Length: 225
Image (cartoon, rainbow, N blue to C red; front, side, top):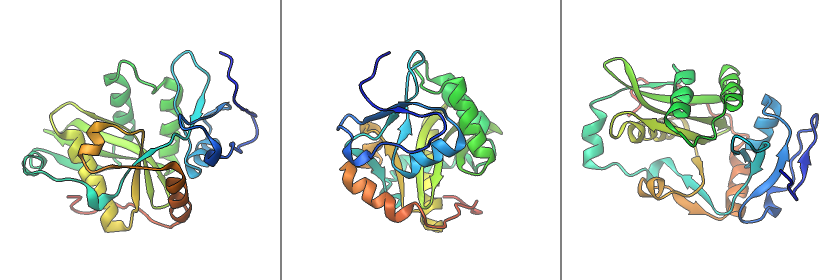
């Protein structure tokens, strides 16, 4: 695959300026998914996203989709659904990412990505929210914490509303602990219906600059929601 964009050097972790990326957002290619490179990417509003036969592609699209925790829309039906689940924080990360990978036939979550993000979890950077029913994992989400920002990667539901309840739990926990926003990356109608909003990339990157160095710990609350 020939790309007319910069190739990342193997032992350098500096990315092109995301402010200057095209609206589509393809910024660079190559490199690897090591801890240092991934954290550098997320700290600058960049994330990897590529198909099976592609090299690693790095993106910073315009616009960006953000969910501010206080804007999450809680419906009456969702309040009823919440009662069906036992919600846990960061107790079963590997099963969450494995299930996201398994349930998405066109997934970008390769074995390489699963291994890299599981290592980020072990190092304390990647987190998960899980919904259980009868002690079985039926829904959840995972992502990367950068300062007071949660960079959402993927979510899944095996039972109706399970992923919505997980997202609600994350928003509640962020509100309690000083989290600023969830980076949902690409705009989708589903997330917009839940309260996420489309933001110009420049505004997003400026906001990220003010949040990425905040010392916030999204600790497990006794009651997430």
